[in-house]
Length: 460
Ligand SMILES: NC(=O)c1ccc[n+]([C@@H]2O[C@H](COP(=O)([O-])OP(=O)(O)OC[C@H]3O[C@@H](n4cnc5c(N)ncnc54)[C@H](O)[C@@H]3O)[C@@H](O)[C@H]2O)c1
Image 1 (cartoon, rainbow, N blue to C red):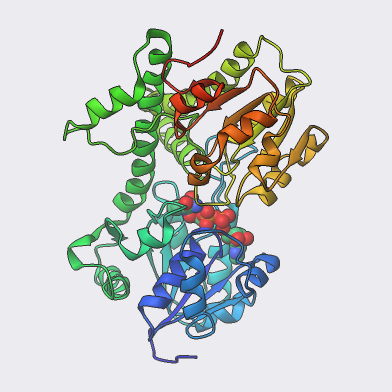
Image 2: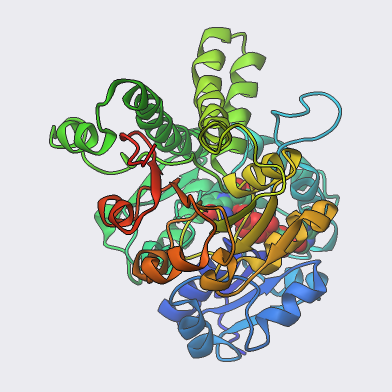
């Protein structure tokens, strides 16, 4: 282990953010020792094995290069805190499900426990970095908990929100649009900020390392997610209008995306966004606005989430209406269960809602996904009587009345749909919730094809 002073990094929370982020820091900064700890022993064991707990393209290679060199995984949180100079806190901050603010506010119990553990165990000054996405002014609460130590220790709290997207995490970390570091504008705060800048400056160009005050950094992360989700809900709202009017959402998106003021990214209509962040962070923003009495602002952002739920609902309603208003007893194959391609993460995936609604209608659901079947089984365990799981999409589609594409895995564009058509019940339906398939070719094969925001191609 490296023992240079100032060069011991600890990350508390070995999840989708902590794992990849620290692996890349270890990779780029060989003179630092990076330790990742978690209360979840199984997760730590998986990080130490050949079968990592999360799927992320390029992650295996980075972990193989760095693990046991200068990247270590452990459940010994207390010793790791003592040894650390800089502590990243990357624990989960889900939406609260109980008490005041339930359904909107962030549940800060994991985060607060971590702050208290640091205050209790630390025996030297530390820089503490908020990596988790947190409500505005959480750093102040963290400072208060840390300052309450009776050992005369000093903690500098920085906000360094993570902007990576699952599925492209390693690329995003290697080549970020920006790294944001919020600090107190005091001498100590600026010195702590510099310690973090020094780490990222190993590979991130200086002009991309942005500094700000702590509150701006905290709010920027919530705002970035709210804006990204808003673009998805905006294009999805227009997709609903397209389906009523014979306009084509892809033509509309291409036309507006050419406007440099709008730009072409995040204009793909779909069954709606999922993932652990967008909904929770917007609801958190809504809650904060309500707290400050900004009810109009709260309603404005809340509508982004409402529209997303409308889009999930519409997708199932279209299936039901199209398949002659009954899907009881029908076999429906869900192509994809992850909330997006290139991840096994199913948190808040539209697939969960869709599978449950189909089962409510007494359909038999067959789920296939290249990376997310283990999570899907867990998400649907209470309705397992009505769900089958298949590794192979051809098997999933066998004898099915319909296929619903829920995740935009590229492998689904390369399947032999002629072969699939022949093994399905007829009339055969495809509901392309991601607009990734060749709809005309499918129609020619004989499918009734229902894309999002485009005219259906059908035989009746
Ligand atoms: N997932 C993303 O794409 C993403 C992107 C940017 C930011 N974020 C934010 O980063 C944070 C972490 O997200 P995630 O997706 O990595 O969550 P995650 O659930 O995958 O990982 C969090 C980990 O923290 C551990 N943990 C909880 N309490 C602990 C404690 N007291 N001590 C030690 N470990 C503890 C959990 O066991 C879990 O393994 C959240 O605030 C999230 O909003 C997530």
